[in-house]
Amino acid sequence: MLLVCGLVAVAVRAETPTTKPAAKPSAAAVVVDNPTYHYRISLPKTWTAKQKSPKTSVYELPGVPGASSGGVFIMLAGKPNKDTAKLEDIVNGKKEVLTQRNAKTKFVTDEATTLGGEPAWRLVYDVPTTAKETQTINGKPAESKDVQMAQHSVEIMCIKDGTVVDLMYVGVAENAAKFQPAVDAAFASFEWAK
Image (cartoon, rainbow, N blue to C red; front, side):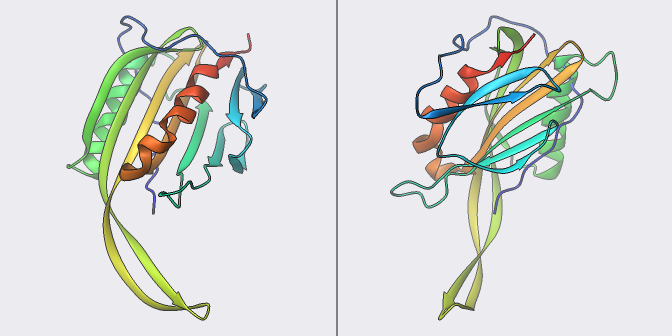
């Protein structure tokens, strides 16, 4: 079970960017355009769209050997709660919400970066969680038990022209490294359309 936190109005101090410029999409990628919030991003064709709207898009990553679930890639966009919101405020608000929901949230990376050439903030964090695991026999639930696991999230937040964009990958921590190259390629492909 994955816990997904929504967009919270916050801001961040701009420091030296650390992400690479947008890469050209490969033949194995599909370009997703968001004309409402003026951006585009290239995602692997193997990722399945589960929800698509101008404000919220969710893609499921397929499993690979050794990881039955790839997790989800989420794109959120919208106007901040305040016209004067700064990136630092958005990031600090996000971290506050995460630690209020689970005091054991561990921030692995908390640094300035860029998204589509604009100042942005990258958070990488792990959140311990409990999921239900249900075994089935002959297609019927037979046994259910709680399983302890760590949810791993990689998130990049940015504000441009009054629009907040929050890109996030959420998966099981023990499998995250298997999906990180594709997630990083998606982040790097992000472009502002205007």
